Image (tube, rainbow, N blue to C red):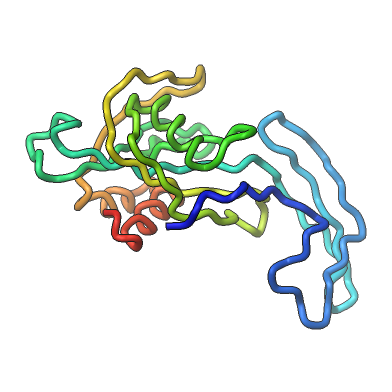
Length: 207
């Protein structure tokens, strides 16, 4: 698992990790076309290696934490007390008009780390407090259109507490045995963050 770094927002002056050998993809114009309060949308007019120019559209939104939270069976009231369970939320997603079973997740607020946000979102959405949280991975998402980073947070040592849902959160908390979690996550409508979180936790030997 990685240490929890400072969250990187998009910085047009930051040099890329791997610069092109013979072309610097100059940004000839950068424009914001709309702001929603949730994200900012715009485009960069960019010079391409063949001498042409193209508008590359983007949406810029805050980083998000996705929480892989594991609880012993007896904590969630399951008869199979010897098997760990993954905490999930079942909610309707108006964007795709589907009912989705997902890992808990939420926006990283100003001044928070991924682990701070993960602990808070887990408590608010599911009513579980975590004794320990750690960052598994952070990365850019949907790099063809988004300026958005995601952090996968592992949470353990869960204890029930009171949930505190936002006024646009209508969800049901449920749990899935860890041994079945990936199969459940792959059932349609599947969710990228949920599959990523489970796979990365498995790769780290946490599930």
